[in-house]
Amino acid sequence: MNTNFEIEIVRTLGVGGMASVHLARIDGREVAVKRLHSFLACDPTCVAALYDEAQLGACIEHPNVVGVVDFIGGSGETDPPALIMEWIEGDDLGRLMRAVATTGRLLPLDVVAAIVCDVLSGLHAAHESRRDDGLVLDIVHRDVSPQNILVGIDGVTRVTDFGIAKATWRSQYSEHGAVKGKLGYLAPEQLEGRCDRRSDIFAAGVVLWELLTGARMRSGDGVEVLIEILCKDAEAPSIHVADAASLDDIVLRALQRSPGDRFATAAEMCAAIRRVVTPAPADRVGAVVRAPATAHGDDLAESGERPRLGVSGGATRSAGRRAV
Image 1 (tube, rainbow, N blue to C red):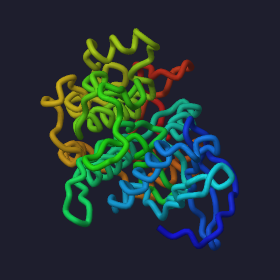
Image 2: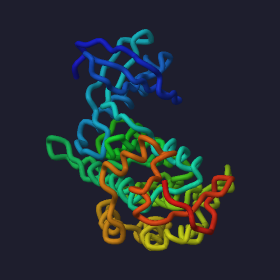
Image 3: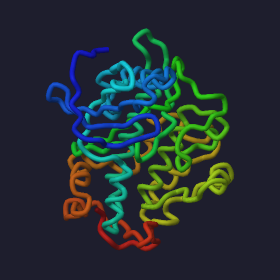
C-alpha cells in the first residue's frame, strides 16, 4: 500500500485499548486515521491485526460501509502503523441516540427504519464479500453496536470498525472459545466462542430495539447480564413504546436465542422492515444528524407522534410527544 504522503493530525476522535482514532489530512483531503499506540507498534500480533482489518475493509466496497483508503506499515514507536479510512462527517449512532434522548423524544419510525436498513445493507455486503481471487471471506463483524455505526450528515448510515471481525483467511484468529464484542449486543452463541452472520443480525436487532424504545435492552452488569444473554427472551418493543408494535415481529425474530430461528441474512431482515415501514429519505435522516435537538419541526412530524422519554432515559409507556 502507498506510503508516499505525510499525515497531518487535526484532532483526536477517540482512544481505545489498542489504537487511537484521529481526524487527519492527507494532501488536503480529510481522512480518519486509526493508529496503533506507540507501545504496541513493535508487537507483531497487533500490527498483523491492524493489517488484517485493512485487508478486510479493502474487500468490502459498499456505500454503507466506511471505506479503507490505505495502510501504513510504520517503522516503530515513533512512527506506528496506521489504517487510513474515509472521513464521514456526522456522528456515531451512540452519541446521536444520547443527543436525541436529551430532547425527551424518540426518532420517527421511518428514520429508525432508514438507519437500520443501511446498517443491514452494509452488513450483508460484508457477509457476502469475496477476495479478488474469488475466495469467500465469510466475514462476521462481531461488534455491531451504536458506537460502530456512523450516521452522516448526508443521511447515509455506515458500518465501521472491523477490528475484531472474523474472516476465513484472517491471520489473527481469536483464541478458541474467546468472547469478542460488547456484552449488551452479544448473541448467545458468542458466549461459547461461536458466531456466523446471524450473530450480526442479532446485534442489529438489539440496535433496532434500542432505537424504538430509547432504552438499553440489557442493563445488567457482570453475571447478571450473562444470565440475561443465555436465559432471557427479549421483550417486544411495544411493551415499552406502543407505536413500535408494527416492528415487534421483526425485532423478536432477529433476537431469537437460536440462530436458526432468526433471519437467514441481513438482506432478508432489511426487506422485512421495508415491507412494514418506508425508510426516510437521506435528507430527512441528515436533518436529524445536523440538529437532533431542533429537527422536530413540521417536516419530521408528518410521520406521526412518537413517545416522550422518561427522565431516567428509559422509555415511558405513554405516547403523545412529537418525534425529533
